[in-house]
Length: 493
Image 1 (spheres, helix red, strand yellow):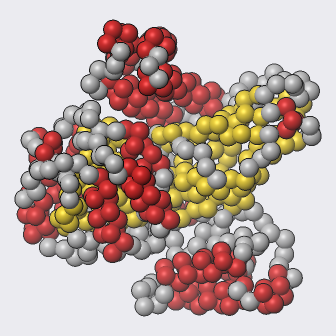
Image 2 (tube, rainbow, N blue to C red; image 1 turned 120 degrees about the vertical axis):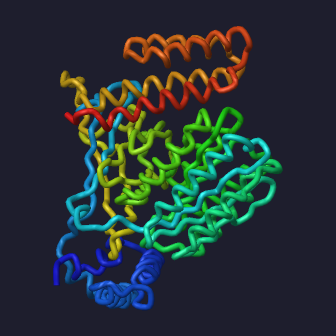
Image 3 (cartoon, rainbow, N blue to C red; image 1 turned 90 degrees about the vertical axis):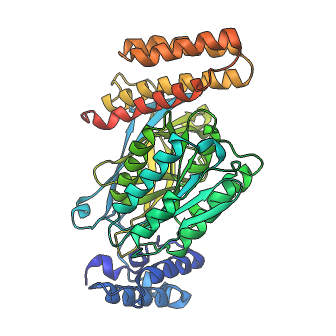
């Protein structure tokens, strides 16, 4: 038996100091995935028996203590993922004022990805069919949904929910569906009513949970062209419930009337993302791109659990790839997914107070990474992280690494539009316009002439009309966000 298999904590995918509740939860998750009534794959029955044996020992405090006494020192290694950190400066300085430091966290698959199959999907399309969706938008949504239905593999599950002021299950979640019959049901969808997103999300989550399986990528794709009113809080609570069951949510907004701040927050709860569809002709491309990304998932969720550090504050986080989006700072952060050919990259900003720099070495980020890999039968052991920086009396003359300089350069553009939007929301339209003018100058320097022209137009519009143009804030926001995706194409240095 290998050393990994003989380590009961590794078998259950928990730390050695896990609580009894954590051990119990890990056992139930593993047992659900591997129970012989559900799995007949070679080796999985034996693994199920090992998990049972691990739980029998670790759930009994006396047996656990005896077992712990036999263990060698814990090795903080992981056979399935690897991570590296790159800092904007090699060390911090002992000084009398706060200092900024940036950290790029890169999480990628190890070689095991070559032996793991692509996991089956359990996807629900939650489609807005309110009156405003009539015409080209609805025609394109229906044709794309049918295209996705036809592309399903035998092991995939696709359900479809249509909503307006009520929700209807167009295609229930099931395997081996009659695709011709289901295509006909999609074709019969007709726009009517108002937009109430909670109804659609609740119905979509119910369909996902009908065939939910930790061995699948479980994900809701929400597509809407309007704003929901009065049920935003309930939607966000629903997203938290989805995250607790490892169900992702991605949002796509068509046109200019939907609430991008709300869709960002909704997706952020689960490590998903939002996308802007400026014209109906882009619906097909973006939906298919999202579907293909889910097919290529290696790790469907990476959860960062953070322990607060005294006098050090994590003030900002932004996911650079596989899909760019700002991330809400919290004790538990769903960072997103790792694709087979694209690592997960997140840029963090820290403010370090002078009181933190008393010792010669300080911990910038401490906590753990917990990874879910649907295609892997055994649980993935968590990784402890304790990322430190030295404190020197003088600043280093070593230049920042090229990778983090490039990321910071692109992020600066995005944060300019954030400041412009905040100022406009506060009624400071002159300040908003100046931020957009500075953004345009930087964009021109980078050769982004079309986007620079858009930023200047919006600056002029804000100064004269004290408002964005119909789609102005989304055009600038999502175009500058798209620039952040350029990093994955660059040669890593």
